[in-house]
Image (tube, rainbow, N blue to C red):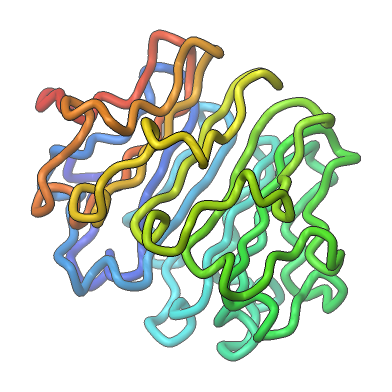
Length: 265
């Protein structure tokens, strides 16, 4: 898998997530795909499409310089022709503007990440503790300028809500029952993907993990409603060192799941 690896410096601002068929998965135990702590400070690349679309981690043209990526994360989801155009300046935002911004829009090919559209921006203060991600049909989009989708600064300090389902399922950022206290959410991010009956149970203590355990963990599991985020199952946890530079994301059929404790993955 050396062809899929990048050197440490190159990976400093990269985190590769590949989504496609079951044969495409994140090979988290391959040392060449790991990065040291410094390396991961400003990284996360995610590209979603068909199996022929993949994250070309060794292509320098997909890299961004350190300064440029400090406050950037580009995620574009659509058909194979839609890809992460990391070297296109028009998709970049200035450092200040992106300090507290991450735009993610998921829908048809006509829906894309409009990073240069001011109407999709939020002021720095407002976005300091916000990241809105909504997944559904083309009519569902990232309403970054809608105050009703905002949460107060304190409340969002340790929160990121992501819910994936039908258009009736949306990010209920102003519902206190979906909020978690600051301490509890300090090291938590819950993402559950499935049918509308599957939702982010942020107030269920059984879905919480202790602070130490979650310090270097983020669980993302995508599949059928029976697949859920088993945050309290020790077998799904990884030790701190192991997870320091790991984030497992696997998207495919129900038989494909996040095998965080399987060394063979």
